[in-house]
Length: 88
Image: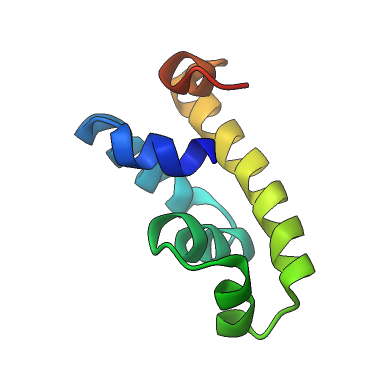
C-alpha cells in the first residue's frame, strides 16, 4: 500500500506533514487511519479495537485516505501527494 511505503521511506519532514494532516481529520477517520497505517494493525485488528465490522473499516480507510490526501494538498498545494510519493 502506498501509504505504508511512504510512511516508512519518507523524510522526517514528510513524516511530520503526514502526522500533522492526520491530526486535522475527523476522529472517526483519524483513529482508524492511525491504527492501521501508523500502528500497523490489520483491518481485522482495527475492527476489533473499535468494535466495528472489517468491511466498515475498509470503507473508513478508503474515505479517510481521500480526506488525508486532500488535507496534504490543501496545506502544500495540489498534487503534493503525487509529487512526493509518485502515486495517484
